Length: 93
Image 1: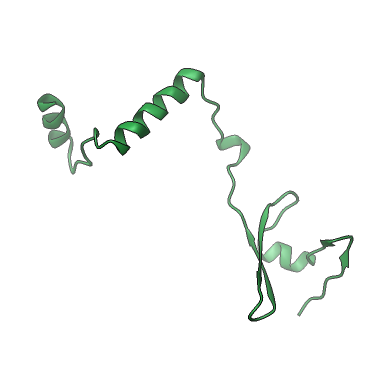
Image 2 (image 1 turned 90 degrees about the horizontal axis):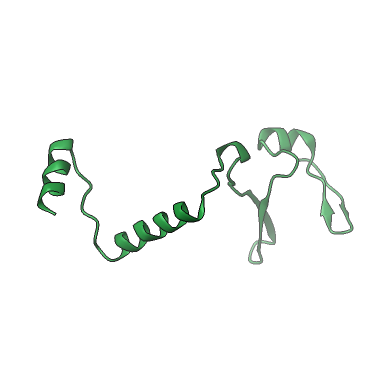
């Protein structure tokens, strides 16, 4: 078992554990205290990598909002098992 010291509210996780858990500088972790067991749990939070991030225009945001509203209102049909069924549904709408 590794040991860590708390300094000014910060805990340094030992390097071998950081490597095993794939924790890098800047990784955000959720912290949970389980009072029944006296256990503190740290869970890495999944975040979007900067290279995967897409910035939407105002029009793009509006289109996504419209699509989400349509889905919520039941205005979207599908999913379809093949393209023929999707095309048939488009023609019938």
